[in-house]
Structures are given as structure tokens and as C-alpha cells.
Image (cartoon, rainbow, N blue to C red; front, side):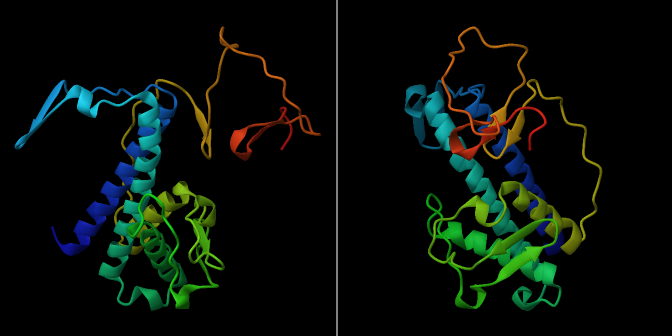
Length: 235
């Protein structure tokens, strides 16, 4: 495998890992992620018992969040390396989309590199007060970001980064866009908006508890995390 194909393969691997991390995070949040581990696990000279590595549901949910962020970081790292491999001096590339893709991937990678569990923006002086954008995919406005805690709202979120990864692989590295394999149908239908997961129900669960909630002026019901549920027909 040559260097070019190796980077394409690594981008595909990063995308698939993001897919899996997304599935694990959703399943952990819904308490349906299996948490089985070996009763006894031997690897090389070490041996652990189940109770040493077992996970409680709340631990799995907590760890799944960071697993998802780690997958995001690895996509950024893979993109940075892939672009550098095929574009000489990517920071000054004449194609603004290519240059922006490289800078966004590099800056996100840098945010995680020195503090992966508390990612913080480290914006180079020559990249401050600028906007890097790949049309219809992602945009990063660097004004005021340097030294601030990393936040998905700064660049559009993990799905924007997934789209950027595919852009790098297909548009920059010229990987062939093959039809996706038929995936298994999900066992449970759900819809996700940001971190809010919605699952259709035929009726109220038997253990549902009625809460007194002050509705908004338009009839909407405020939810944790800044989300609002509104009546049908409302924006």
C-alpha cells in the first residue's frame, strides 16, 4: 500500500470508529449497551478478574461521552496528516476550501493534543481573527477562541467534522465514492438533535411521573440543555 492509499484507509478507519463511538454513546445513554467483560482476562504477563474492569451503567455513559470526543479528535488528526501528505504547504494552498479544511483539522487536533480530557483552543497568531470555511460543510471563526475551552458550537459539531472527513477523503485525496453497504435496520427507532435523543412511544410508560412545568409563551416546554419541545406546527 502506497502512502496515498494508506491515508485514505486511515480516514475510512477514523470515520468508522466515529460511527461506532456514536452507536456506543447512544446505547450507553439509553442503558441498552451491553457491559459484559471477561470473567477473567489474561494478556501477556497480566491477569485481571471481572470485578477489576467491570462497568456500572453510569460509568459507561460517562466514558462513552469521552470515547465519542476521542473519535472526533482522531478524525481531525487523520485529516491533518492526509492533507499534508498530498498538498505541499497546505497552510498556504491556493484553494481556499483545501486550506480551510487543513487549518480546521489542524486546530481541532491541537486543541486536544495537550489536554485530551479538557480540550482547549490553541490558535496560532497568524490564524487568529479569521474564518476558515468549507462551503456547506463546516466553518470555524477563530476570533476570541485562543485559550478558551473547546466547544462543538465553535465549529458546528461532530457531524460537521464527519462531513469534512469525507470531503478530505473524496475531494482532496480523490478516493472513489463507492455505494454504502446495506446496514442492519435499527432495533429501536430514535431521533437525535444534538445530544437530545427522542424515541417514539405508543403511549405513556406505566411509571411515568407527571411534572408541573411552566410553558413558554408559544406553548413550548423547556428541557434541560437548552432544548424546547413545541406543539406541532410551531418552529
